[in-house]
Figure 1 (tube, rainbow, N blue to C red):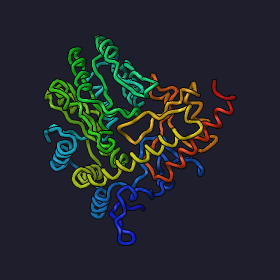
Figure 2: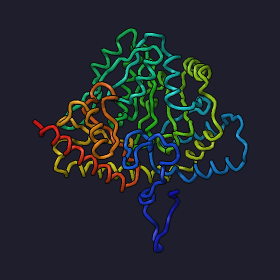
Figure 3: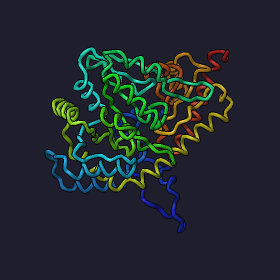
Figure 4: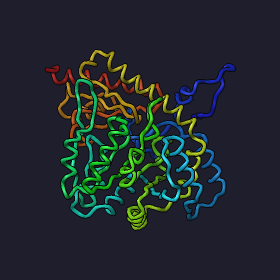
Length: 412
């Protein structure tokens, strides 16, 4: 297994980013991401290839050494760790008593869709956006109401269409909005003013807000995350924040997440719903891993962020310098380890291109079509892996684009 402990070579400390150059093999551990063919390279699902922070592995090893794996409670130390992390990393004061454990961000969102809305009511989302939001809404008998982000193809920039959002929220059946903050897949880091405006519109129309902030710790170096609850008193009053160390520390398989909110009446509904849905009790490893991540994982996280940012820039540069760079462009991103690529110059439907790329090169990407309105001519690429695999992946991507264009008889 690769180590992210400090290393010395020839008497010289190895730079932080080089500790991520070697990743553990994952083909023999029942990995969802790596359940692919022998010559295929998976760069799709939001799952890093890096071994998690040493502090987390140490905590898990100590827990396993005990040898007993019974029922686990949520201790005060867990809530304090979450509270301190948000205060020190994001400048948000969180009352430890307001922190509620959940087995995952998606189970928590699905539960809150049920507890905060009624059947047939509408939930506002901003596509292209994380596809599982749609499942959480539709599978619970509610209706999706899209307020698509505005896309400027010239600058490759996304922004919030506030006129459209105001119209959608004015629908009497629109009683809930799910905000993706930072935004997956576009990589937008929303500003305080943007979030405050969302809060004003939701409050004016009687809608709660669920803010999914699971990618909040993976911003580019020098870029700060703005918690929705910090944007204004109104935002804090009407919102529930969902988060987890799963993305930032690559521990999604440990089933550990949490929500927090201030309003007592809403908190009662949320907590009652999570318990009723049986997604509020931790497994043995969820608690110790989260505490270790938030108490002793900050340095590892900052190293990972720098490494992933360099990976992202390597992909962007390779695309821009290539002979097919005129046909696709990476959308500038300030968060997540995902690259959102505009392929509209040569594809009508990304599903077809993604299938072609896998057949011809073995590269496995996510089709933008699954992310709702505006995503049909984009692909998403996960760059949270070794630099070697990232360069391999972008090389395969470029070959796939050339082959696809040639097979179509050119573009135009």
